[in-house]
Image (cartoon, rainbow, N blue to C red; front, side):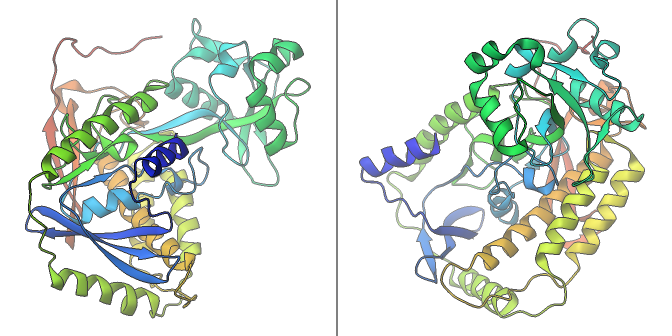
Length: 436
């Protein structure tokens, strides 16, 4: 989809900047007026004047150690808006897909289970009968994920010695070789390429992996953030059509629909407006932050070690099941990492300096992780993908509301996150508890 969009844009004569990473949005009051970017190909910074900006940069799956997401899902797009004054909404709702291959996290889609694949524990038992007797493997993603984690925690999982991850098995052999080859050819190819296992012969090792963020930038139904001239679409945004637990295939529809809506709205906003006035002091401050603070900075902490520590902390404290103790422990770890001297580059080359972009991505991941954890600690209930063991019940009386996270430059008891809330708009359907 991305390549098709790019090709079409080029065909229309639109400039596509392939080797450019936006590192900061420029604002005039509460209005976006441009962006500062790093041009890797030419090894220089670039200034973009903009009457309107749309962020379509995905979520933050790479904040977890095992994820189905691309390497690019590091929340850097969301953090551009967050730093510019936009709010993040419902960040505590992180969807875990139950069947990611171990150890890569590459997704094995629900289609494998819909065509007859079954989940087995180390005793060879089809265990989903304990958790969803009627739906079995076709229960919702959060239910299946929690069932798998329970099996692993109670000692009925397998152990991958190389990675240290626990897992269960997804058995497609019962489907039959010809049906797998005909209907699940892509899944078979992925399995053979990333595990060396042919699923027509042996079961596949799977476990829940971070898959999708229901939360994102707080936007209205047109995709507009609270910052004038700034829109967001797709997983970067939280229009909240997904609530606390996205249904399969909704993300593609959401991306296409709000891509269209935000594009049209941003165009209408931009037409007829004069050129934006670029605040020189912001440009100079950003240049100083990057060149003096990071590019020529010094520090004893390896930013790549920080990235790995973020992933371990989130995997341990904000995984499928959560508790106050675990969330606070992860929060403490993230705070400590944010305070470390990791914001520096060992590579001082100007062209194609991936070290610089990686450090900026780690900075964004830390900020996003803090927002996820703060919102998750505060929500003392279980709802959708947010499962608190210490608060296992859903609580509509107190928690039928959206969480909002605002960036605070000054550190408070909540770290750099200031929490707020907004009401859920109930229209045709009244909320009801799900039962299996």
